[in-house]
Structures are given as C-alpha cells and as structure tokens.
Length: 178
Image (cartoon, rainbow, N blue to C red; front, side, top):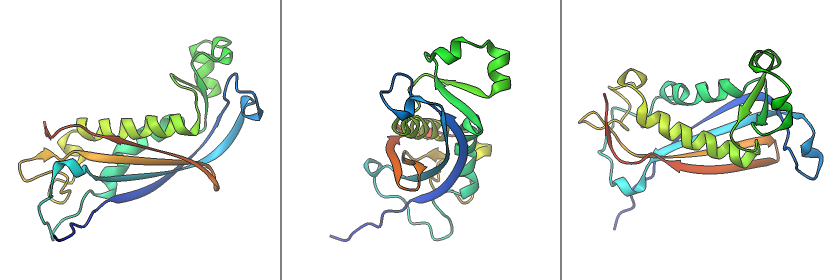
C-alpha cells in the first residue's frame, strides 16, 4: 500500500488586542493586552478521498487564505475584547463602545475560545466564499467541476511566545461555487 502525501498550507497572522476574563479568579480578570500570533493551516478533509494529482497548481493561493482570515482578525485588531455579559459592556452605549474600541463577543475571550471561533468561521467563510475569492486556475481545493473540496482548518493562537491554544474545525460537504 502506498502512502498518499498529506498536503496543507499554513500562514501566520498577528494582531494587537486587550481582553479580560470576567469573573476569573486570577490576574486575567484585569484588562491586559497581547500581541497575538495566529497560525492557520488548511488541508483537504481526509474523509473526502484522494485529490486529483495537479502538478500545475497548488492547494490554495496564500492570497485566497488571507481573504478568508483577515476580516476576522481585523475585527479584533487594536480592540478591547470583552464577553457581552461583562459589566464594562453595560457601562457604555454603542457609540462610546466604538470610540473606545470595545468589541463584544458572545464567548469568554480566552485563547481556546478565540481559536475555536476563528477555526469555525474560517471554515464557514471558505464554504460561503464567492468565486471571485479564489484563484480558480490554480487553487485545486476547487475541483475541476468548480466544487469546493471540504477542508480542515486548524488555528493556533499564541497569547505569548510560550502559551497557545489550538482548535480544528471542518467545512462540511462539497459545495458548488455560485
């Protein structure tokens, strides 16, 4: 039995942000900041089967990957990330929150939850992206029939050089580009 090589692409992103973990019994309950480092890996879902051999293409253009990731990261860059139930969120109206850079999240802004959010939303963005988002002649995650091949998205987010959290999410099913 021959081994089928596993292919993936990985790109690194970063953003600066602050957060606090409301009700956490430690220092992380205080507002503090990080220069977050985000590693994103995309690979074909192993349950899909063997990809066609393409010597004239690549898995996904890095520019395509950037289009899937950057809108999510830009929402958090230079913002104070707070869970929507944090009392700080109730102290300001919408205009003041925007001016102060407060970004409300539906989850506790821990590294684990942030990695999960990014992985799930990158996978979703991939499945719902328009044809203009892809380099159709080269991205071979788009099959010959102009269908998106399901992918696994792994996101590792570093709060510091030594501390990170990782989450993996999958796009589901094959989807025709529309």
